[in-house]
Image (cartoon, rainbow, N blue to C red; front, side):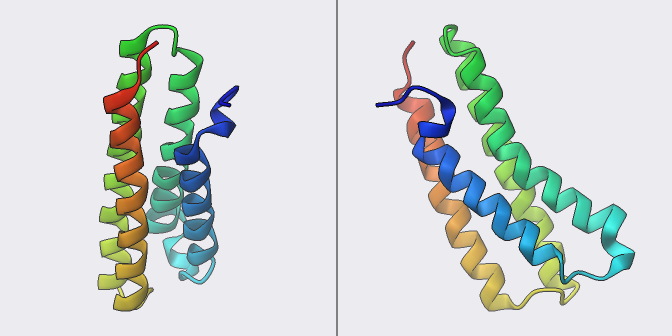
Length: 119
């Protein structure tokens, strides 16, 4: 039974994904702290933050769905920052591809929730 946004599978997966990104960025150079590191951590956290904010507005179906779209946008932004991380050689191609695959799972669940939600 879903009582809070914490109960949503997509929220839990998004949170796990954001934490993987956070741990990953601990190895980035200090010179990236206020650029790539902060951007990728913020965008990955925004995936869940938008789900949570939308949940608070779920009595208005369009509002919740709007925030799910924002969450999908944050996921895409995170993928873009990951591409910079691999291009700067902060992460391997294998790690990059693994994180992209995980992002696709989160994205598919976000899309499905968006398609199926009704207040």
